[in-house]
Length: 163
Image 1 (cartoon, rainbow, N blue to C red):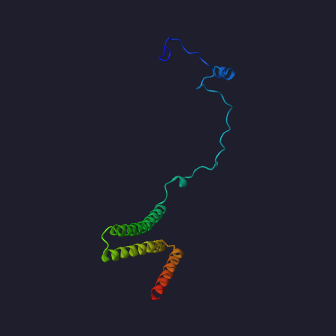
Image 2 (cartoon, helix red, strand yellow):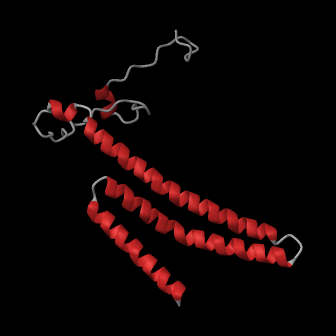
Image 3 (cartoon, rainbow, N blue to C red):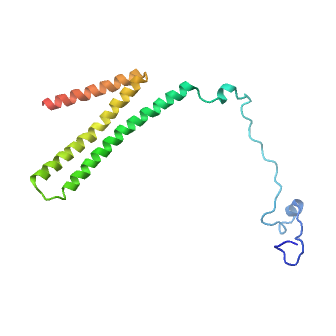
């Protein structure tokens, strides 16, 4: 006796042949025979060699670690610049809630100028960090280009200050 059948009678057995021939007998969960599916195409017959299956070499791991460390430094420079300049802007907004004296207006003005300057200098600092890190890694072409861009920016700022 099964728990699902109260009068103890066994359910009729249905074979795959019967379910194919009589759709009324076919239940919701009945298995239906299907024609054989096409096999997946064969992969390259070349066996995996030991060199490919091994872990990456020590040299590759060190280069990847240095690359990730350089990316972290660049991200830190950008994050610190953005957070500091954002904090200075928020502080200047908070100072506006104070009574309007000349000292608070000067402080607000100075904070906003410093925040804007820091926000503009942050990508320049990122260029300096990236150029230095890539130069230390031996990528001299990028380091020279970064130094050239920084030199041109310094020249432009210097010329602008003199005017």
